[in-house]
Image 1: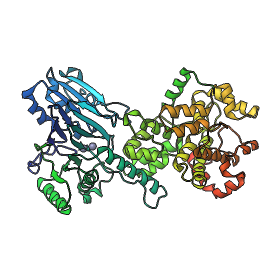
Image 2 (image 1 turned 180 degrees about the horizontal axis):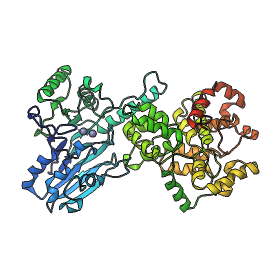
Image 3 (image 1 turned 30 degrees about the vertical axis):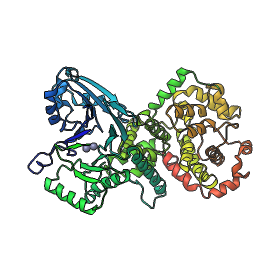
Image 4 (image 1 turned 45 degrees about the horizontal axis):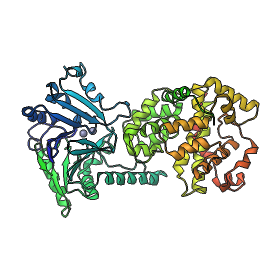
Length: 293
Length: 289
Ligand SMILES: [Zn+2]
Ligand SMILES: [Zn+2]
């Protein structure tokens, strides 16, 4: 299985002189199974350069798995060029939205409205199929299996575990570890804490040990204090997660949009220094980075 | 047990989607959510006092798409699984449906029903802590108390003529309301409440508890004991009212675990005035008009 990072930035595209080394595109990860089936995790702006790379090899069947429908994870979808070319197939997978009571099929129709985009959904040339996923039920894609897992974000967010011939990866999408909403002196604290711990243990067991863990690490611990409830994790919570589940490699992504390359590297060096004997390879996600599992 | 026609069953389950919530919770949800930094626990505190909102939240969260390993039984647990923002937006969408009128056409007093549900819920939780520790979860007992008579609000809203006749018959012929409902509607509120809970995949013990709370020969459980006892305590003391006045003859049916002396049980619960006062202010009894 091969993994290529096409977008590693969180929240909003951030091009500019300070982000050239790590890249400014928002979340998009290309996964190739051993039989070369194409799995795309999220459709942030990074999907546009990915689409360019596919053009010499059409027709293509792209299996897109959306973690959640925040803009930074779907913005590139209408610019996925193969959708305008007959013969290609696009399968879009994602979560059921409880609030709107709609499946993932609404993701494109929302974006392709007259005022916001010049082409109507009916005018797309590729075959576009939608699959609203059931949490915990694996989808077979070629010789790989993709299993959706419910994470914690302001909107239902699916993490994905991809398994292929004994190799595995897990991508959290956007995820903030659960916290107690009560203060220690509140009578409800203990009961809620038990639920949080149970939920965490359930998630760890579901993800299980993986060869590669890709985690939303938008913040440092110091920054997080001001961003509680925003739905993102920190470098340290990612390390803790990697240790609990037993990940061989940990890839930090969803970089904060105002974070310069220098600042990112400084934080990374500091984090590495704090976990000198961790039994897991720590890596910083960079646009264009390829990992072979 | 008589049962509803399929058509009626369909009518009732879809009707609940359009059912308005209680005035205080709608008002509080709107107020709290105006502030982007509203505390999650405050929002949970409001939602878990409103049977309609609680029922609707549990309904959506137990939907098959989320494949949750265990059925979700409380609003707090829903927050753990779906996050406060989703729960907040769900609550807002429920609030947008509007508010229940104080009296509907049946003359059923919705606020006194709420007071009954809230006090039964709180007392059931206390009873569980004092008499059934380790055998049942106090929070589950709270939810059972909050939702046990949910079928009555559904009747009041959507089968108002038949429900009005049942309420009148229960008074005129001095019979328990559920028997009057069975004769006039064809099914009682316990059956309908359980039917909805089952359709929405609530945990089986909760469904059974709602279904059996008037069945003397139902299989006993700690949760059912706490619910029945709480119902007795609250009705005897006149905490709220849900169309089924207290009758002294009921004392004979007190679950064995509580001993035989209801006065002693009430004494062991301590001062219930705070529970009643909290519930009153939430039900807005005595605070409006
Ligand atoms: Zn994001
Ligand atoms: Zn997001």
